[in-house]
Image 1 (cartoon, helix red, strand yellow):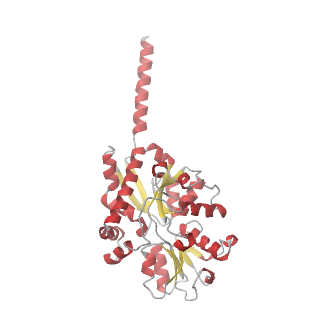
Image 2 (tube, rainbow, N blue to C red):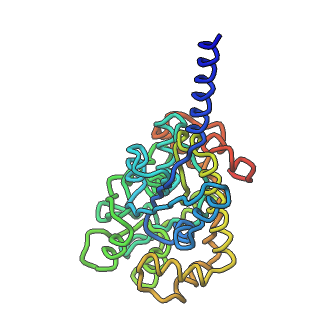
Image 3 (cartoon, rainbow, N blue to C red):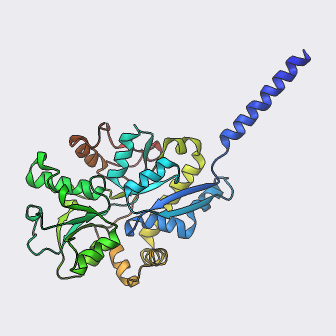
Length: 333
């Protein structure tokens, strides 16, 4: 009887220890962002310590949030799979790619924005997609896999026919946005085009040599999500309070930008070290096509296209298949 009581006590202690371990969440959450104004919600989160604020409110104590800067969505996926970061961010295409390859073990957390992608060119002969030729080199963050690369394929399919979607791939080169802008404006580079994001696409258009050849809103028939955040199912399931704190921080950052554009511009300049006047950044944030939201829009349109062209083997049933349940109540697409 005594031995039985000891066994039961040990089992109870083991159960309590296991429950305690199960409840333990990470002490640090690691984010990665890229270059440009599309990542402004993450910059606001970092500068105002919003994750730390919401974590403390959730009873998680002194949670540390750290932020790295990477050059492309492909680099994001490598870092996420290696365990170097907990939250990746970037264009829709890299998220869809890792969702497909992981069979749903990596999913979207939330959108960051709805922002158009411009293909800007300094080649005076290029008036539209059909004018692009071997005389042109188009810079984008990562060939084949970036949202810019997929957008160019969508534009090519629209111009030349569905089977010609990859016709312009041979013209693309991988390059970080700041380097791409410097290349096309230098007049000394073989790069004549840039599939750009804010602020780079608007800064380029200040040069009279630059014209917009493709606007992604025209290709997709309206506003669409440009960048978003994604994470692993393992992190989501093992850190529910931290996950909710991050989502609350994202929502607060987006709301802050909407109400405080000038202050948000100041935070961007402080974080990025960019030298443009605050009036210029404020003007970009006030433009109609630039909008910050956690609601995913037209993500399914990208998924359908990537499935048709073979880069996404499994077709999601809808946008909710691609995201964790916490944002399923939003009016996404």
